[in-house]
Image 1 (cartoon, helix red, strand yellow):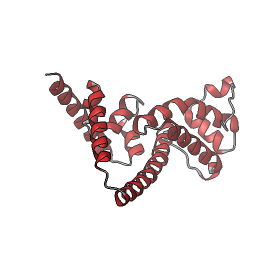
Image 2 (cartoon, one colour):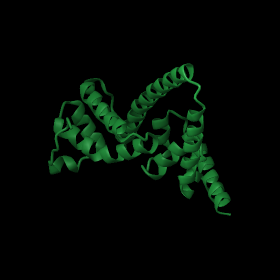
Image 3 (cartoon, one colour):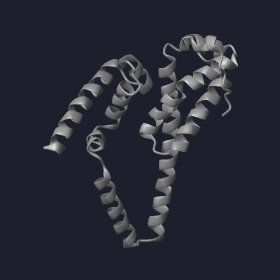
Length: 196
């Protein structure tokens, strides 16, 4: 970890916005407190959408490395936590896009070099096994759109307000309200349908 662990009690009492301004001026202890304060919640957010633990950890490291490197060019953050979530989301989405492009190229190569029906059967069997292992709530949650899932996780697990969610997801305030409302209704309907 490139951020040292500072235990300065006076810094621990400061608001995120105060720590942010100190960090922008080059204060390493303030930067460390921000990192330590938000690491676990950033990790939990990232892990909800990106299955590889190391990718999430690397994304958080990359985020804080960039913040320190570009600190003098950063603006005042109205909600530091929302800014961190938004930035981590962008980093992880780019990583995901690169991986998906790589997988697509690998799949295309595999299709060109082999038409082994055993591979297709194996994929079908693996998919069926995976579907059987899903739990009740996960089934219902997975029926939501990706944006509905993300909006609900940001609201319920991270406690963000609609305005902050809109900032993280690059959406309008009204669109966020609609996503949360539609997602909640769909979740209830799916759980009722599965259990009855």
